[in-house]
Image 1 (cartoon, rainbow, N blue to C red):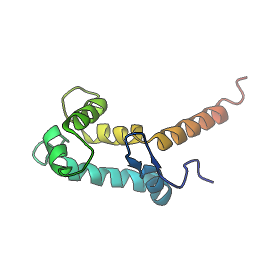
Image 2 (spheres, rainbow, N blue to C red):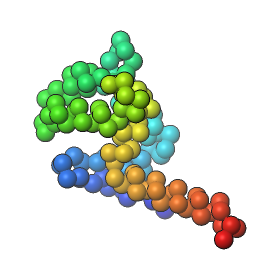
Image 3 (cartoon, rainbow, N blue to C red):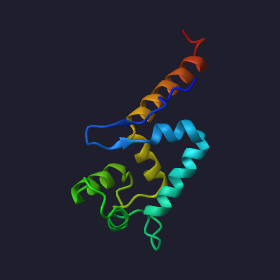
Length: 121
């Protein structure tokens, strides 16, 4: 039985979260592979990272996302502060933007800790 619910959810901004569905269908390795493919589609091919301009160009015409939304998303994922998203930052951001996957990850981590440290009561 999977800890990840089979259907995606819709968050308060109206974004439908398909990551849990993909995780259930593809498994962990498949999901990471698809995230890497997504990164490749969004990145600036000369710089090898996702920039605001490459993200804006790739998502041109996607309704509901403003420049401020994109900048906010970039800032949230930019751990090293260079103004761009490398592949690791992108993958982490995608998980953080998926509440269902974050909850499933918390559950699995808690379960692993309990199993590992069951003799330390």
